[in-house]
Length: 152
Image (tube, rainbow, N blue to C red; front, side, top):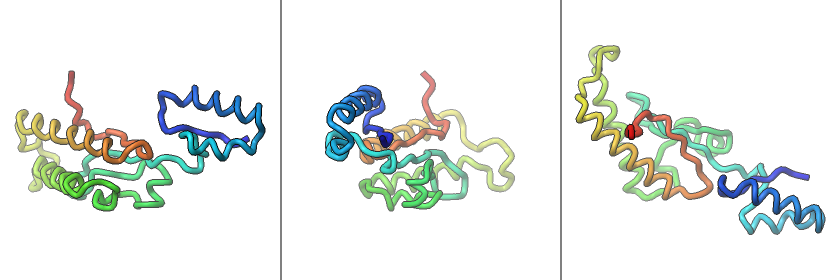
């Protein structure tokens, strides 16, 4: 019997239990139609993207699993993702903006940004992340490694 996973992590255990019960009752041949009900084989894994900034790279999205790396490489050009043009352009703007947080004359020095600039940037980065997740949908998991989350 092949392992399965479902689109929603919250429903994963329930769906897997239901799938196992159906397959046990009706046989392995019933597994294929279950894909249309939100269950898919592990081979069709979701794309995992990592969200973080690397000064000077112009990239804020990175492959987080083999499926994403096979499709887009390790650094991911946001323009290649199935998202709106405004969203991928904003990703590029965020990267350029982040680059100004580095003292390029001597990068180990403290950032030239003050607290208010960091707060404004962090808010914009989290807004982008929310938009990105909404546009990409359930086939994508975007892991926030940006350290831009606003402290509660």
